[in-house]
Structures are given as C-alpha cells and as structure tokens.
Image (cartoon, rainbow, N blue to C red):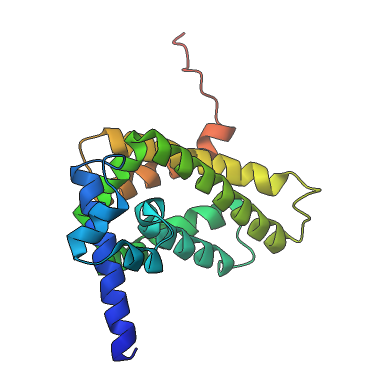
Length: 210
C-alpha cells in the first residue's frame, strides 16, 4: 500500500470511527453527515467519496464480519452436513472477525453500535433486509455444495432460515443483556446453535413421575 492509499484509508477509518462514536453517544437519527464530516475536519463531499451515506457507516463493520462468514462457508469440508457447516463457519470465524473489527474501531464501540442498530427502527429495518440478503447468499452456497438447484429444492433456504433465526434470537438477547462483550455474544451464540439439533429432534415434554 503506497502513501496515497494509506492516507485514503486513514481518512476512511477516521470517518467511520467518528460516525460510530456519534451514533453511540448522540443517536443515529440525531447525527447528520455534516456532523460526521465536521468531527474529522473534512467536507461533506469528502465523506461521500468513501460512503454512500450514514447507513453505510453503521453497517460497515457488520458487513465485514458477514464477508468472513461467507468465505468460511465456501471453504468448509464438502462432507459436512449443511447446518454443521453453517455453525462452524460462524464459530470458527469469530477470532478473525474480532481481529478485523479491532483494526477498524475499538471493540467496545462496535458493541455499543450493535445496540444502537437494535434500538433504532430505521437501522433495524435495514438490518433485517440485509440479513435476508445474506441468507439468500448462504442458501445459494449451500445448494451449490450439495449439488442442488436452490429454486427447485427448498432445503437450502429452510436450513439457512433456521440458522438465521437462531442468530437473530441471540443478537436480540445479547443486545438486551448485561454482558456486551464479544465473548458474551460468542458464548450465547454457541449455546443456542448447540441446541438446534436437540430442539428439532428431542422430546420437549417433561417426564412425568410415576
């Protein structure tokens, strides 16, 4: 990376961090593009050289994490069953996601913005839309791995919808809980993913005493 590229990256990262700091402290709706640009002492025009809008800054880090999960799924062993491949793609990408996040912003700030996304209607709606797009991408990868046509066989979309639902539950519980660390989110996610098989196949009724 040459000097010009490093300077551009520093400007992008500074804008990203300023945006997330403002979202976490002031609120997403209360923050304007002008506010973000002013925090880095650049023009609005400069901001738009790096980001299409403030929504893109809010989802920049989550999108990076999603990219790592997608790449991990593409490289899972072909003999793994789909749900296990999805599970391992998330859990075994966790350290790489952690490293990628801290290169951009403090982990604590990333966690705070996660809560902002969950509590801001416009961001939550965008998050759900993006989640649906990600699930479709994952379903296509699963279908390709299994030699299936995703539009003719419903199973890839079904298993990814199940997986995505578990992730949404853990995100919601984590954002409402007291432990806002990445380790806390990882532990919660692991616990819920580990229960998918037993929940689907087990008998939920408590055994009655004779």
